[in-house]
Length: 603
Image (cartoon, rainbow, N blue to C red):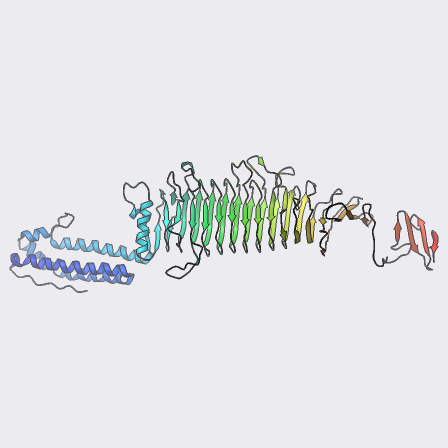
């Protein structure tokens, strides 16, 4: 950029005004051109600043001439005096001072424009206008500017402000941590944080808190964060990408009348360090697929803690706790609820919720690894028949549950595992302590078949659960030994045949016949029953087959190894049968004392 100036003659009064106006006009044209260049890109902005500096340098070269004419000659025509006054009314000692001052202002504006181009960030306070009831319009003005430059983020002040925020595509909100708080205005019928429209993609929410202002709301529409968008295959204008791809980090939502956080968008979103407490409805709802979720905590919600729909989201390090606050209908208060999920992976903890720890309803091909404990009670209210995990109409899942009930034997939670309705092809491992019954509660429903179940629990209350209509190809329940119940009870379905391996070991130091396995067959109407108890007496080193009044039938040969008087032999009641050394069959009432003891009954 180059500036040229005409040399002034002694005819100052006649020519000064025209020369001065031409000079100012050239400066204004060059600065205007510079501002336009800066708005296009950072490089142009820096170049514009350089040119402005060159203009300032050239104008300094005229200082001696101007000062000599205006001040040194003691001549101040009306036109020159008038030119010393700026557009804001400020009067300068010389024309040069006015030019320098205006040059500094333009340079500062250029630097600010360059900063916006570099960081794509604006300070929210700069868009707030004195007298406005809240910051809703300030957010709108800030996002309008960011949209005009292709996107960016709004920087929050470190204080609590009231606003309803609608975030457009490629824009975001960034705070300074917990001190940056957006509070939902009183009487709102909508969420505090929303998307600008149903096609919004690529937004950022990070490092701030949302206050739902629960005491000043009256409708469940008053949510904390509700992100809803088109789930169809609609590509965006920049990347032609169909997914939402929102990023949410370090967000704390509290005291909402409605749900705290609700994601109802297409997928590929990334959520990290999300905490929601004291929601007046459900805590967190995910209705979005193919997301990454790392580290979320939800607690003290009025209804359920975490509710998951759709498929293929990875949940890592999840905690749901103390949900079901002030709930009197006993309908809600579940820690984690998975509805119609496919391919969902979840790990974490569900603790001290009013009802069940985790519920899987209509789920397939999911992987669950959860510590589910202390559920079934809140604030002195106890709910019967609660379970660490409940399966309803769920197939082909891999489940690993650790559970406990430190409240004692007569307090919840009652069960480690509960089946409801059709559940097949699930592989389940449960390890627990202090449960009423570490087992399945069947509720009389059917079609629970081909599941692999391994439960390891110590029992304090030996009430046997109902296993009717339950079919397992592999089942094992390890419990503290007790002479009154069977640790394993499996009932077969009369319409089909199942094969499997059942291995059961117990430790008992008393001289009791301890039941290892009970096998029972029933007709469809329940009128006919055949039952076999396989027991052990460890002290006598005996395995006992108890037919419970039924007749045992063997098809094929029965071979007893040994057969001598002092080896394995047949015992019928108190009568012992053996074969002596010369091949004769002998019998005696009582144990034999020699090879020739007893009477010969056959050769």
